[in-house]
Amino acid sequence: GENVEQHPSTLSVQEGDSAVIKCTYSDSASNYFPWYKQELGKRPQLIIDIRSNVGEKKDQRIAVTLNKTAKHFSLHITETQPEDSAVYFCASSDSTGANNLFFGTGTRLTVIP
Amino acid sequence: NAGVTQTPKFQVLKTGQSMTLQCAQDMNHNSMYWYRQDPGMGLRLIYYSASEGTTDKGEVPNGYNVSRLNKREFSLRLESAAPSQTSVYFCASSESRRGTGELFFGEGSRLTVL
Image (cartoon, rainbow over all chains, first blue to last red; front, side, top):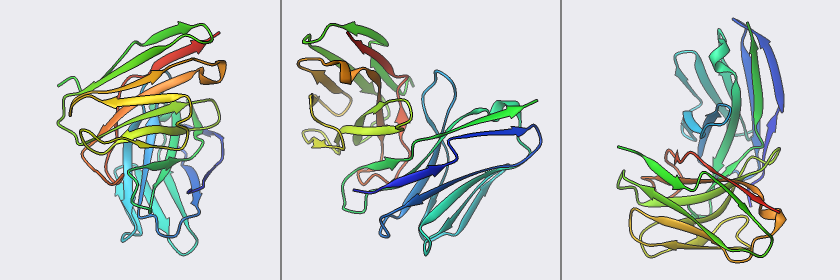
């Protein structure tokens, strides 16, 4: 099956700085790449996603970039705020037709006020 | 709309006991999923159902069974619980049948097997 690697596992930034989380995937036919945010003790929630026919997508302070050739995609958070502190998961879709997402192991982001 | 509701939120079992986790969604979604979340391992798919009456295995199905009772409900059963099944379980639903749409998660069920 698909192998999704996510780095770093933990990340600390000062409030106002930028944060970047990177994921690589193994299946070149994957075509959907979402990012989920999970606050402590809460459920994961989708924050942004990108499809393989697009190279970049932005939503206010959040952006995702996709490099299909290199099989990696990244989450960029600018002007970080304390409420951005959470665990972030990347995922990629299953190209075999199965109704499945393969998740990375998560990045714990801490924004220091 | 309540979204995705799962019960119970917490459960402690002894090895060998059985239990069923219940999940219901009120968004008229086609697909429903059961994931488990373990420290350092992200979310791993146990079973999914792309439509009423169909279920398929995910990455880690051993030791579990599921039932898609109707479009709204998808239950997960542990027939003989083992300590390795200690985890947080999330039910999710999606409009997509192909794994390419937003997942809406329930609040999670923390299961401890002693």
